[in-house]
Length: 68
Length: 172
Image (cartoon, rainbow over all chains, first blue to last red; front, side, top):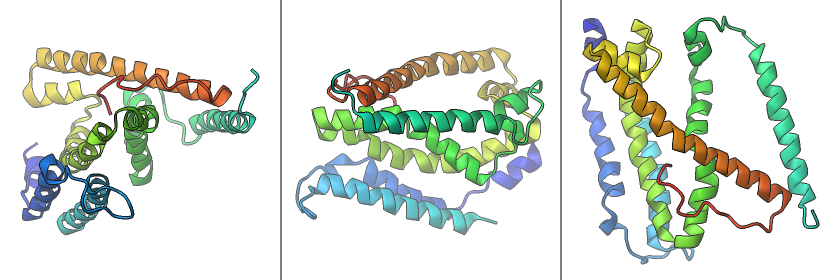
């Protein structure tokens, strides 16, 4: 168990990238608005769908940065 | 039977038959000893990245995702978008927790969450509580999936029927 914890419990500053998507996703007042529209879609909808892609990119960055 | 959607029904029956055949074929492919619990429950811990990717996808994107959430969006509007931030938040948490959980469980031979809790905290009552909570919490979700399957089958036979899943559950 000890060597397992030593190998897997390491903190990486790259994990702070997750804080970006946490704050953006969990703070609805920030995106609870219709303007600006994009291709006729209100900001509320296209921002969240864009955030899915941003979150996937951030997760990929963290994965490759912490992959050792 | 006057308004049967024959195209949808044919596609459904063909897919259903193919998936059923695939299931029986897969049962004989890389066959494991099903008398062992980790072979029966975890596929002998031999799932690689691709299979696990499909399993996680199948866990997350269920009848609820494809029927209930769109129905909620159709009926109630933007409130249905709770599912999007939920997914954005939950994936990084699993990203951080699951590899460690997998590693520890693989090393010590744990199969269920109860096994892990018992090994980690050494309290079999806590493990029992976790196991019972898991079973009880899964039941309404299974029931929801069955209702979803019922709706899918009903719609493919008769597309004029209503969608009854609006506001049915909180589970994703």
